Image 1 (tube, rainbow, N blue to C red):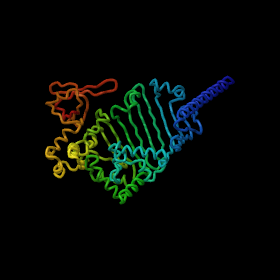
Image 2: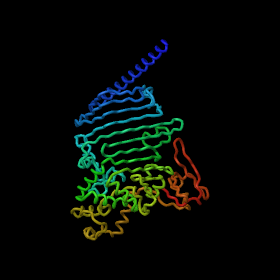
Image 3: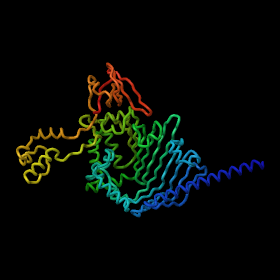
Image 4: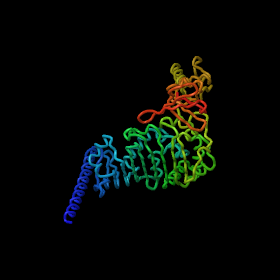
Length: 469
């Protein structure tokens, strides 16, 4: 009995020693980090945290003060989690060697930031200089919420402040569970802006974790959930003031523009669900289950109906399923997500008029509608062109952008080794490189982690083909 007591005492002492050593390692790392960032910001913390089992470490009551502005950013708690305490002993070397634990977690609780402080005022000025309020750097999805909200194409930091969000408190978590045998990683992320919104994402990555450092090469299966926690009230009030109208008018104007932005006509049930979400908040859930390999940079060149099918999109608004296939998607013209080609104001006509003005010692008139007789009369006879000629030259001089284009099966050999899309009669859409052509069959090569996958498709199974060129 006495030996058992001694053994237990020894185990307790060893556990306490390991816990103390881990606590010391965390404190030393925190102090080292504070010293490294000292030229740029002052970093302080209230206490070190180590869980009883040592599988979670972190810091409490952090305060960060940038040297340039004197703002104060505070964090209630920072945590790192691993399967056990052993991972934290030499964790940096293990990660560098690509030795990831089966579970790794990171969280920030209570990240407090003043959006009307000097730091974010400076960031807001940088944002404005970059043109983000006019859509520069904003994705099509970023623009949806700002539709019909004054003249902006996306919300800026200054807009948030004007909407009454002078301070924001964020909770952030990131967890990854990795199975080295199957090389599958389950990734879960959550972001909450208290009293504003919450966003959750769950996805599955296939392959070694280190290869995803620069982002996934193909769009993975994922579940996305967005919950409005009060932002809709501030947004609606702000946009109503911008339009000198009411929140209801802003919502109806937003809804009227939504179809053209997405590239389709919304059925009444979809419009009703979206209208309710804008007016009263709620939840939006999006499920992505790709039916073929699609890279992020190729999304812009899909027509909406094709994208819904290829990504296996399923949407719910306030727990009401939205049948995306019921939307009357537009099929003519460019894919809406391709973005706008920069308009070279005046293009050829502007250049012609500028040169004409220089030769005559005058000042180039402002560009107007192409082929305007008013401008043609101002040009020397040798420079005058008809509207048809101007449009033809403009199309010839405009930089050509690659995109998916129809491809007849009879001409399929011309697309050998190029990227193609195959639309089958059964509704499947597959994208890859055309590897070979043999009679009435084509071979497609799909990039896969560690190699490639090739398969044959018979002409009888093909509804239509497209080539990227």
